[in-house]
Length: 140
Image (cartoon, rainbow, N blue to C red; front, side, top):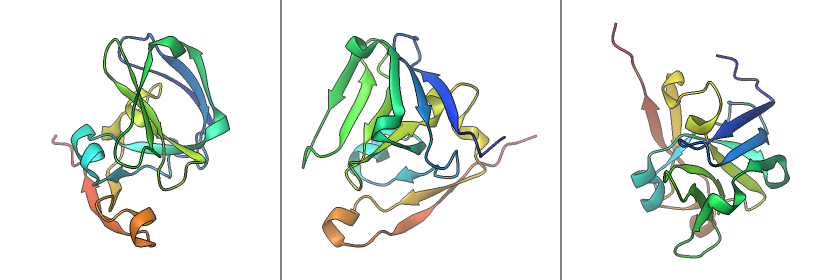
């Protein structure tokens, strides 16, 4: 897998939402989070600057979910329910983009994914902490 991807297209499961994104550091920024929402969502996300994600189709199909401080903006397809991207609370200038929506990429392509401590959020605690590492070990 090429971790140095610069720009890539993506879509939700049903294809109603299609987008193009320029990643800030390719797939090197892949991570998960332990906050209550991410814990349930279970997605691996990579980073993109807010201005570097272009919705090509289906902007009207996107639905927004906010909770708690309403700083993070979580977008998902209103038809198939798939989370496509979110504006980060830790840095509202960045989007987290669901790698499972990226063309040809699977969360199972990553042997290890750092997991950020979102329970003790950096905006609340003043420090960023990695809570652990999620590993995928395929069977033969």
